[in-house]
Image 1 (spheres, rainbow, N blue to C red):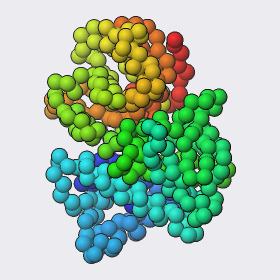
Image 2: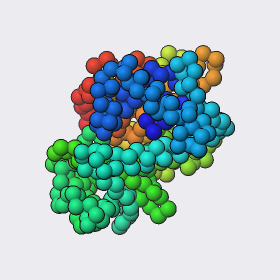
Image 3: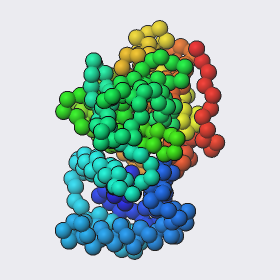
Length: 381
């Protein structure tokens, strides 16, 4: 499953990755998931050992057709692990997300096997009540280790205090705040339809030592994956929206409860009036400027400032340059949903956004992320 996930994360299913790239991607995954790190053991600290482990176990199993009825869907030649799948280009993104959903489920199942993980882990169902997303707990009779009452948890590296009642979690507060942050978190992970009838969204509640962590199974919406590249025409269908080149060719696109920011970082070919000062402040923060006519008091300005209160999810897409070497329009990296931190000025407004998913180290140079990679302070009224 880790090999499949690495292929998807590198947008290479179908496609190929070198053994070195597979090891690098799996090492990165292990940095963010201690279960993977524990499972890989000492091999994780030695790239050569990790490559040897990958070759002798999952790669040999995949190319030998083990667990797939003897049918081999991959091959391995000259150090390249390659899929033998054929997927029409228009369906690649959908196919990847279907596989991702299966992989997430299989990994959750694997890590819940008796004796497999020392940490307590539970799968919670996202549901909907009183017009907001909540979390249903599994049966307490079958899951005696579930917390009760107000409990400190972490989600997306953010501390929260969640109220565990008999069958659900319906409230979570940030420190020094009485605002219920749980619906916002679930909408950020799964989109505006989180928990609604017909959906199957789930999250994992996991205890590691004294820390309870909450993380999503799968991705938000139908397929947008942070730091995967997308062409403009691919983005609207991912969110269940119609596409027109004229409308989606803009830098600021509003569709219902979603706002999309499309930012080209290199403004060298833009006229002076359109050379907005957009850039990464750090791996976790982004400075963006609105159109020259936008004021803080305008409806567009207020929808930016109060996007959370209005239930608007703001999605950031960035690219380094407008064109590729062959002259075609360059695709965008999806940076995930972002959260308003501060603003200043008028016509244009300068806004500081907090990213929900930090820019991976491998993209810092391309996207101009300062080498310190730390969260710079933000000020503004």
